[in-house]
Length: 133
Image (cartoon, rainbow, N blue to C red; front, side, top):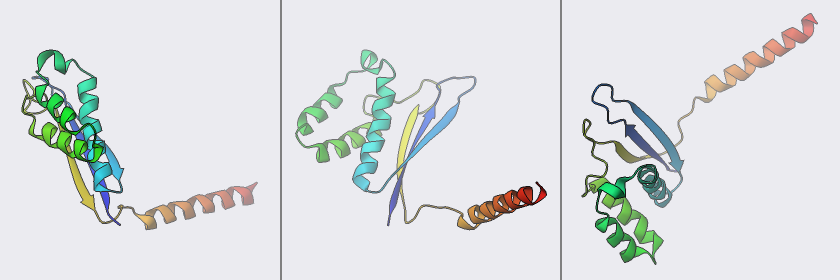
């Protein structure tokens, strides 16, 4: 089973100390991953006053064109945001203030052996505490 990992990298537009943070979400389908990626971009736009500074004609055109078909709207918006024709996500001191990637993995990485050994240690500790009491 494939898992899609959506990572948003936020970069603070500061010439002295750019700060980078990431957010990661997982999805079980490519379509869900695209929706998550679009949500990251929309959250960034919703959190600022971008449309006061940028002409959203491209955004409006895509929404008007695909409004009745969400399956087509989400990939079209993702492509629009990735291409960033109005430079909405370009920084003054950093190249991009937001970058979103989607990667596919065949499985969810986990270290089961480590987790099992931790469980065993906790059980041993509980038993020892009970024997001493």
